[in-house]
Image (cartoon, rainbow, N blue to C red; front, side, top):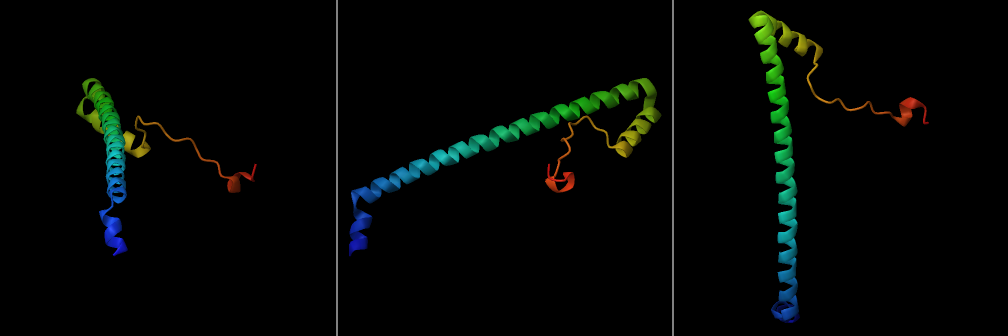
Length: 98
């Protein structure tokens, strides 16, 4: 009986409305963060691919097909692509703690 009375109360209904509004706002915020991050990563990847294409196109224009094949093999062997490398992490365990 007390549960039924609580579920019908205006305070409970108002609390449910506010919970719904808060949930919708959190969902909207997380959606915005996800979509903007995905767009940023996609744009950065597209720019990196375009830069790589330009480099390989210049190699092809100057050295031909054989030069392009050699450049690709060399880049794959050395794994040198135009990306930023993360700095080496230092560990307290490896560096002696200080």
